Image (cartoon, rainbow, N blue to C red):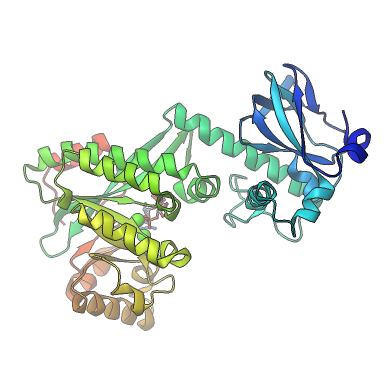
Length: 405
Ligand code: C2E
Ligand code: CA
Ligand code: CA
C-alpha cells in the first residue's frame, strides 16, 4: 500500500495500518513518502548484504522509521518488515511540513524525535560512531549517517541487556596527604572486542534517553562496588562520585528511583557524591535547584563538574547546594604553559575556598601539576599521574598496596 493510493482519502488525518508478520512495510528502492510510528508490534530494518540479508535494526512500540522523507523523497535505503502483527501510524511527508505550524501534540512529538536524530551529537566521525550531519553532506550521506545512528542506538539497547556496559573507577587523591580520598565512577562499553569511550556513546545515549537506564545502573554499581573498596580501606571516609546527566533528572519518577538507590545503599550518604554539569541548570534552573536540594537532603554531596568550561555564573553558583567544584582538565593541562590558565586555576581555587567548597582538579598528568595545585590549596586531584580509571578488581589490588603519591 503506497501513499499515492491513499493520499486523497487520508490527506486530512494521520491514519494507522496493520501489517501481518513477514509483510514489508517499506522496500528498499521504493519511493519514500511516509514516516511510520509503531503503535504496536515490532519490525526489522534490513539491507541485502554480501552473505544474505543484514539486519540493521529492530524496532518496537513507540519508535519511528522511514522518517528520512522529512528531508527528501529519495528511494528507500532499506527494507522494513513486520516481525509480528504490527500496527503503524502513517505520517505523510506533506503532513510533516504542515505540522510545523500545527498544534497536534503527536506531530510535535514525532518532529522532536526526528529532529533529535539529526541534531549533531558530537563532531567526532572517525569511527563512524557518532555520525554527524553537516551542511555539506549529500542526501545519500545524510541517509546513511541516519541509518548508522539508528543502528548504533539499537546496539546500545542490546548492549545494555547483554551487560556490555561496565564501570571503571579513577582514584581521587587528597593532595596534601597524597592518599586516596575517593573515586569517580566512569562508564565503559565493551562491545565485542572493541572498547568504546563514553565521549562517543554518552551524547547519543542522552539524545535517545537511554542514559536514564545506563545512569541508574552506573549509580547502583558504583555504590555497590564502593562497599568493597570501603572494606579494604578499613575506614568509611572515602567517597564515591557518580556522574548524573541532566536527562536523568528531567523525570520526577526517575528522581525518586535514584533517591531509592541511594537510600537502599549500605554506604553512609556522606560517602556518596553526585557530579552534575552546568548544562543541567540551563533548561530549568528552579527544577535543577530543587532536585539537587532533594538529593542533598538525603545526605549526599554534590559536585559541579567541568567547572570553567561553561557559563560558570557566580549568581547561580551560590544558590545551589554545591559542595565541590571540579576544575576542568583543560585548565590543569595548560597551567604550566600559559599564565592565563594558571590564573584561572588560582581564582577558582580561591573562589571555592571563599564559598566553602572543596575543589577537585582534573587531569593531573605530572608531578609538577600535582605540586602547583597542592600549593594553590586544591584539596583533591585526579589524573593519569596518579592513576587511570581502572576496573573494580584492579582498584581492589591497588588499595591493598596502600599507595601514596
Ligand atoms: P568527566 O566526568 O569529566 O570525567 C573525567 C574524564 O577525564 C574521564 O574520561 C577520565 O578518564 C579522563 N581523565 C582523567 N584523568 C585524566 C588525565 O590525567 N588526562 C586526561 N587526558 N584525561 C583524564 P572518560 O572516562 O573517557 O569519560 C568522559 C566523559 O564521559 C566524562 O567526563 C563524563 O562526562 C562522561 N561520563 C562517563 N561516565 C559517565 C556516566 O556514568 N554518566 C554520565 N552521565 N556521564 C559519564
Ligand atoms: Ca565527572
Ligand atoms: Ca570533568
